[in-house]
Length: 310
Image (cartoon, rainbow, N blue to C red; front, side, top):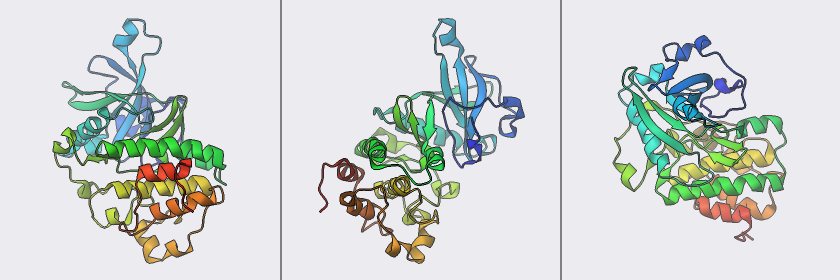
């Protein structure tokens, strides 16, 4: 991993500088091999709740697999002591394993090393650049053709998840990657299912976790309302505005503070967004969820040129 460990999330990408496992405090008690099969090679990222490693599948390697590498995610040692810990990790796996979309990260397995008493998820190892890093390299934002090539698959992935009754819960640039295989949306750790088999998973105490990212969380989430598709739309709209202008629409302030400061009134169309697309994005950025009358699919169609907003 590069220096992304300072960010409040975790990443599963491979084109990063090696980091010695033994030098990381958060993994001081982590074994070199889990379940007798997965050898941890280096830390890719760490956040408040989880850590992700590049790992080698020794079983696949034994059978001469030319690419036996994958990403392995487990909970950090501090959070692993929580009574919700394993349930949270399994919830993420259960949500994403039913999502079959080319722009959503694929999980492989949920496993438990009984001897080490550690649960973990194995998943696709991505090679690419997260959008927060892209924004650091492009302080003026990205031009419309490039923005459209990001926005359409991203919104399509989110619309697909919503159509399957799955909410993401943490839409922000660092949870979206431009990989060698295309865009990937990942980290459903704060997500939940509104319908389907996964809605019967243990009810996790997300208020106690207090893990929303303030600059991208909808104001109703910060005020204790339940997660909704509209909250996901607010978060992805902030991301798209930032890509189009190089600046967060509300200076990365918590949405409640931005709302109270009435920053919404001074919001202007970003320079790299066609005028025809602005009304749709503007609606998605509404602080009042009652005025956020647009879903991910409709926003995708507006930015993709399918709908007219004149």
